[in-house]
Length: 89
Image (cartoon, rainbow, N blue to C red; front, side, top):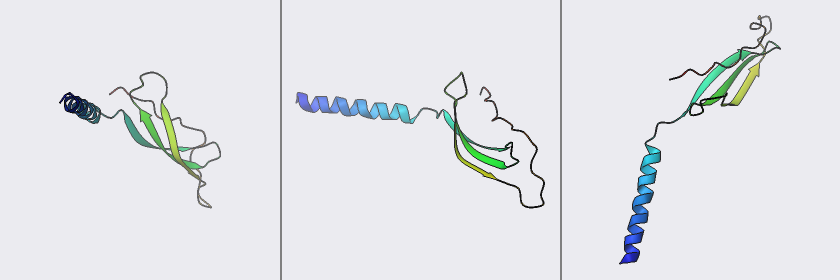
């Protein structure tokens, strides 16, 4: 009987932990950022921002894709524009 009671308590604790972690607000968001690099290429990147970290820049850049403008077209502005600063929600 005690074994069955322990299994029941362990199962209840597991379900409670799953419910608590599954119901919390997500802290990560994904943003699409475009910029022009110093070579005149237009670049697009998927950026994952972790809003749980309050200090520093907690960005993960993935899926970076850069292309030169078509022949005869003017490239974007020279220079690099950094990723946008996080704003407090």
